[in-house]
Image (cartoon, rainbow, N blue to C red; front, side, top):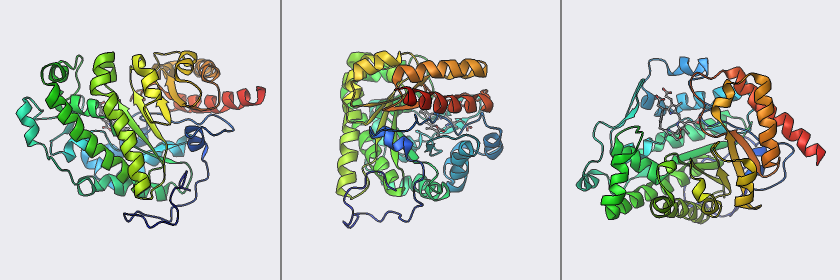
Length: 377
Ligand code: CP3
């Protein structure tokens, strides 16, 4: 199943793979599209990650981006958490930093330090070093191959989510050259070089649109945009340097999908620490708004209205609590959001030292409490 199939019978403008196994569990897609569900679907950001011993084994002694370039390894890593837990969606194993690589930048994953750009953008003139026209089909073909392979290997168990970093988050990495506490270098660009910043964000937007459309053509059944560094911006900078590009991505992706007779897949926007923009995000063209843990479920519902699906938002550190406590916290969260138009998740990714058993307790608690809540209503 393709979710909402639009333009059936028309000749697709691009050759995309067909003949995928039929989808058996569409709960996640139904919740994303605002349809009624029997229970609340659940998945976890970074569900394919180092907290799983089998993940550490597959990744051992392998370069991170070499792993990302191997469709077979990406497929294997994507499937690992589903073999353990009854999750309702898979997310393709990859990284947001493959987009700066496609623009011609070098990025390494340094163990213990994280992503590192040996030559970050320093001056405005450095923008000229970036590829101004990116052949996404060629540069990111390995991600598309991973998605197609994984879609087959999933055997229709659950839908497959594709993703990209959002423009501001990618820009901040490209300027900072890695993680940063303050984002001072990247934010200095916004204040000193607003025009050049707009140019870079526009270039990133173009690549991201083609990249997301390509993921759907390859078999992705939903898309998530990660604006992980939204919290470093205040309301005004977010309104100028993040929101317009986030909106433009949803609009352009949807119109290209329609034009190419590809499925109209649900889109999720996750702008971490951006509650100041919650009302705007709810109207930015995405079916689902992802939330971090610093907002109350009831407040998020009040501020976003009834026509949006919310996703989130348990503090990842709650998984350090005893299992009974995780159950209580999940119960409160599900009651707060309500069991419908809701996709349970953590408020950010899992950490490497978390216990797989506690992840399982989280998933089971969502299913159990949402079924109860559905029955009692
Ligand atoms: O399971 C999934 O969620 C899918 C795979 C996924 C990864 N990265 C795998 C990964 C996704 C969706 C991402 C997105 C990503 N990458 C984001 C946005 C989400 C977020 O966390 O806010 C960001 C900011 C990145 C950049 C990045 N990649 C960081 C900060 C790190 C951690 C560095 C470290 O050493 O802790 C990575 C590496 C990375 N990406 C890992 C995984 C599983 C861990 C490193 C490894 O496997 O060796």
